Image (cartoon, rainbow over all chains, first blue to last red; front, side, top):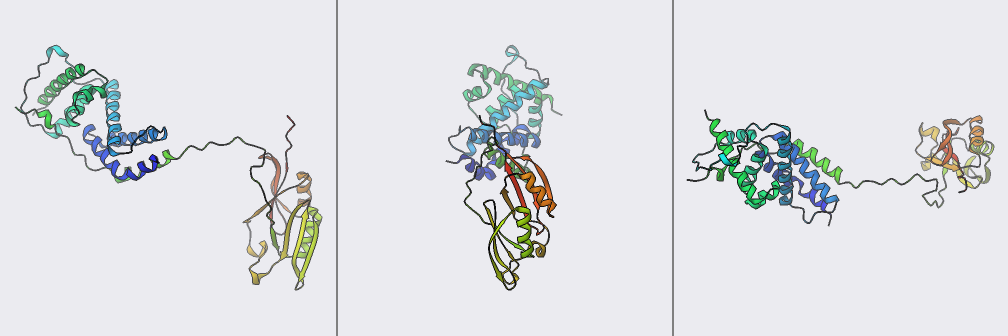
Length: 164
Length: 178
């Protein structure tokens, strides 16, 4: 099976879906294009190493998700997080009744620490179950549950602080 | 109370840019091309040559036969006259055989002089001592296009003969016995 030819054939449809996956999550067309290119070139690398079972859009979205988390990890190491991780002790996951605005969500996500942003995106935008979120972040399930609680609190604090 | 995180909205940034799609397609197609492994340079011939015999057309057959005899050391045989011109002749330069004839415009056979400058075909020929061979040809009126030097395992040079045919003549460089 010529997986390279399959990728070329799938490309026109796949590139739209991969970009559509990445763009709203990273909130920037430029970053989304860079990560889309990274995704496809990584796919080519896997094909050339003969490490591919099936060339599908789902496979490419999986690579894109890795690229997204890697990207946040990188900028997380570079930039000082503007919203500090508060630590377990101070966090109470109160019920929160709000209707969130897409523009403000994007703005707040951009200010969150990369680990919070990754956790919230994988859990609530991608809808992954906690064990899979844990896999992506390289943490235990328990640590990931705790991280999600802190991430929700950090998000809420930043979101409410951004009101008016 | 519903969890606002369960319907976390995200921005619609619009569809992917068409130019970006095209550029990335090119990058992918290039990246999929297998890397070419260049073989080590070799002095061995890598092609098995049957025999291809050049059949040269010249503007003056008689003068050409004379020139190739004098300057290339060609042995001439089987000259056939046709309407006062050279219809066919066979020349042999130490085993390298080529044919020639005068022009036959009715058959679409034209000489370089008639067709104009520039060579479409060049003739590659091995000779015993290339420096002497080229010197003699140039002395006889050939144009030196590229002086003799060592390249590709062969000492060789390029000349354009006075009849507009382009030759690469050379002598294989003997490798010292190992």
